[in-house]
Length: 324
Image 1 (spheres, one colour):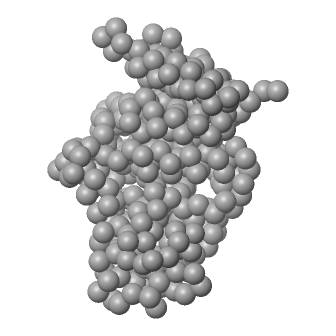
Image 2 (image 1 turned 180 degrees about the horizontal axis):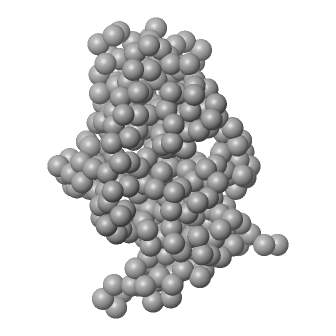
Image 3 (image 1 turned 180 degrees about the vertical axis):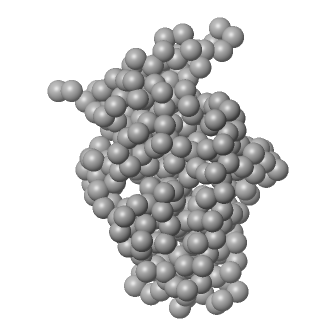
């Protein structure tokens, strides 16, 4: 029986942890793509290690590494999902805007390869700034907008949830959180759609505590960068797995992701022709439906701040692409 194939572009910390989790769960065959550097082939080494681990775990899946500088991208063929993790990581003091030019150059190479070899795949973009790069990936590939998805809100919502958990002696399973907007300092923790059990979170915490939760959530990624000198990787990888699993097992899960807004969805959120974080239903076709969340007045204003910031980033990206 032919297994589902997931290709991971990039074997840095996020990419290798995505490949590791996919392998341990036995979800699919895993193909890892990374650069050949100075005689070293990290994709092949990590794939061999993971394949041997799979044998020990009695998992009948294949794991293969490809050094794309030497071998190209032909092995992308028949990928159900392609996860793009490669890019320059965020360093301390570096804004997401600072990342843009270098990561655009890297991204262009991958989108060209996906267009040539994996035309029927669903793309998950992880590289930052993720909302802008998801939009650019959509434009460069020309794929159906339901098949190009950015990993953002699922991670941000998990961070929000972890900070709530720190304050309460309740199970994670009984905490529901939602973060929308851009993946950055202007993200919007949506208190009106976040709950402890059946109780709105706004009834559990005082206003000052809520303000602290919002600030901690917005700075969650930057805190890790300041402590470690580079971006997070375990939680981002786990966020990707939640998305991949929903797609390949056709779970129809409601997950906040960065997606393209158009038509009725764009009208509801008062934003069009950009990719931004909203809750969507993920299944085997990619984005299968959209959640039309009714935001409070404050939340809508904050969301539209995200939109305006993202429009500026997209304009910069479009101009930079002309130079690449």
